[in-house]
Image (cartoon, rainbow, N blue to C red):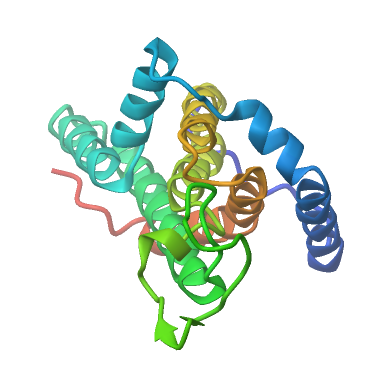
Length: 215
């Protein structure tokens, strides 16, 4: 069954914000130990697998694969499925883009950065660091994208969403395993996805209903 409607029993926004903040703070409290647990320290088969997950779990290949699926569904005259899948893609991409904007402002060092660990904002050592890889850790763009896709996919179809969540968890692990992100970066991205992706999905679902091309 495609597309589950909004649950009228959903928690109020202030409660959701409070829960999300608590989860992120808890992640910071255990950041060093959990990040160290997931990090890989030798280039073995697990490192190779993590590298592949990071490569193909980024937004360009995900967007390309998703658009191909949308086109195939449309050619098969599965118009409603193609419409919802496109909305899922947009929700994931916009969630990831939002994470990229946020991390450009926070300026947090990645675990493998040469600079001392911390949040530096827009400048470090009297230099602008916006867009610098070394200072683009919080939150994780990869994780925000795949989590946004998974949340939206869950709203579209439970089985599809569960499969997307498993893939998203693997991508999130890879970003920590490869020393690219702290545990709290990943957790913050998931929290962001739970807030932003449903709003995007439901907004676009309502606006595109009845105006999607039908062959």
